[in-house]
Image (cartoon, rainbow, N blue to C red; front, side, top):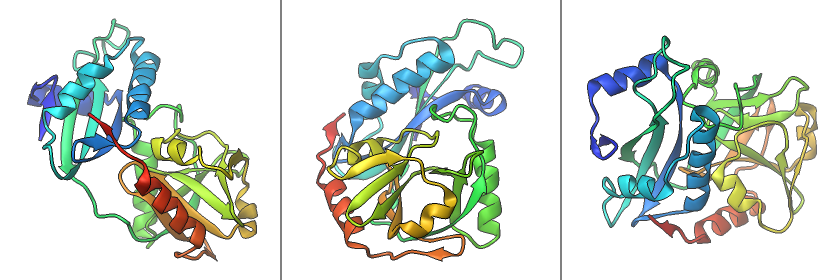
Length: 257
């Protein structure tokens, strides 16, 4: 399903999005009409809209547009993409009128299985914005998968861990959870979990991975997912802290759309 501003999306609008590829988005996992961290998703959309388009986005309108495509019962994934079909390479400097594209797809089963990832030096353009410009991340992700890995874990110019292709990374040492503080997209799931006791942000160099007991990925679609291998280092899939994190996340009540 796909609607632009509550109407069937035209091929012309999708062509503009594909060819200009300028905009931002957020992805929601919706269960029985509720979304964990909905307010954070809406804040992200408004923040990124200001950053990319110098415009405000009405959160209540976004919610109404998403509700149109969401059944009252069941689980699915919805992506809210904000872009302006009238912006082209020739008119990028024009005042923008951001439009709201809502698309839905089936939600993957959770809990998801463990990931085996390889580290790659890469910093996304404007990491704090969830941009539709995914070329760099997709290029590295495709290369990793063709080489037998599940995904990539990025490091910055100083060799510090930052984020995965579509997820935040967390590390466990004892009972403590450390979130790498290198520039990355501030994920909603990370923000919800980081409020728990025993969580902190700190720089983590790639070579410091040996100091940690477990590694995991988080995003809004799959929640908490273990990482069983980073390069040549192996980590447990069933660490007790990971179980506690998953249970804590599952216990968070979703907000109604």
